View (tube, rainbow, N blue to C red):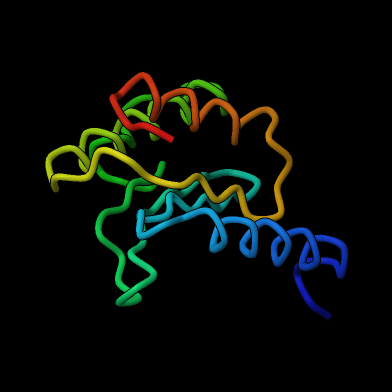
Amino acid sequence: MTRFSKDFKRRSARVRFAIRKSASGKPRLSVFRSERHIYAQIIDDSCGKTLCAASTMDKSFRASKKSNCDAATRVGTMIAAKAIEAGIKEVVFDRGGYNYHGRVKALADGARSGGLLF
């Protein structure tokens, strides 16, 4: 049995296709969420490498216990800080198959408030 449904995979493919059409050489901010944690990474699709990543699993993050949306906002600001440190200012947001709501939206808002443009 697969973890994700056919509808989720179809949504993911549709979002990724739209991103490839409009990316124009920008790296992609990809989001993955599980029931407990949320992960974000900035990927350069031209060479297939992860440029920077942040998640609720980071050691600097583990000390504080907050609600899921607060944690997602904090992960967004962490990924923005790492991206700006790496010289990345503009990205394309890849929500995967997830709806732009709740933790995914909180992560995007955190990344925007951290200084990323998308």
